[in-house]
Amino acid sequence: MQQIPRLAKGPKAIVCGPLGKVAATPDVVLVACKPLGAMLLQEAAERAGVRTGMRALGRPTCMALPAALEHGTLPSLGCIGSRVYTGLGEDEVYVVVRGSDLEAVAETLKTIENANAALEEYARGRQRQLSTI
Image 1 (cartoon, helix red, strand yellow):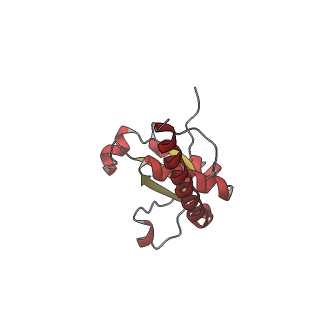
Image 2 (image 1 turned 60 degrees about the horizontal axis):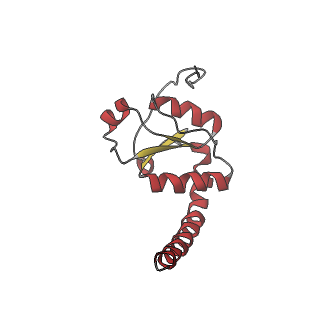
Image 3 (image 1 turned 90 degrees about the vertical axis):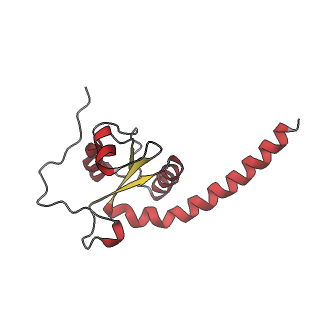
């Protein structure tokens, strides 16, 4: 059985809140998003060189925090406890980003969004071509 990632020692304090409203610099950022947003964040993290390549983590969601601190950006499917406590929708997942990597991920996100918009346009045109054959 795989060990659950955990911190080497417990934190002195935990501060939670919306990213733009928390005064402290975050150690880790938990982003709740639709799968499309998760895909874009994962691609941005990969381009920035801070994606872990780890599989999406399941239960418990809290293990994603120390895993991201140690390894970098990773997806979490969210456990039922987390979903109940936070109101995470059944159509949403988490992407966990190490705080020190947040700026690099954010900087590459626009490039990834633009690339995906161009790919979507191409795929829709190709779909139209294939459906008329």
